[in-house]
Length: 125
Image (cartoon, rainbow, N blue to C red; front, side, top):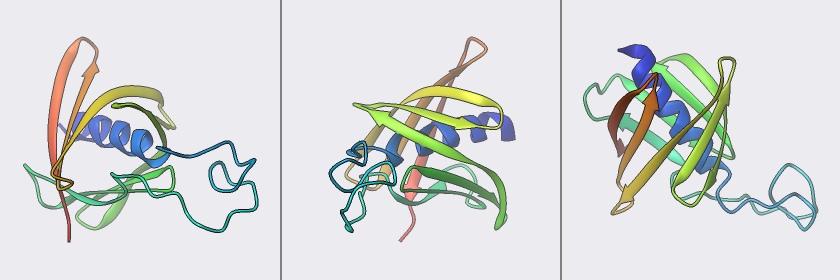
């Protein structure tokens, strides 16, 4: 169960963190350029897993982190394109799709080993 949750969270994190980021040449994006303003993704922030409030996903600046009971459990990077995202970590790259509703509910759909997983996350205020 934890692996399935983690796969979905990691996929989300990697996808949304790079939304709107450039190549760094004109400020912002990939850690280069001269711009000082951070790139903000619509999914950046803290997300609480709807089925288990002790699981928190933190997304921002292309970095994803997942916490179980307040302890860092997984981390990686992510990028997005449209409603697809790619999460990369020590286990490799995974692709998933997401839907952001009312800026407060994030639904992630991922396929792992032929099985489809749907996860719902709520923005933590």
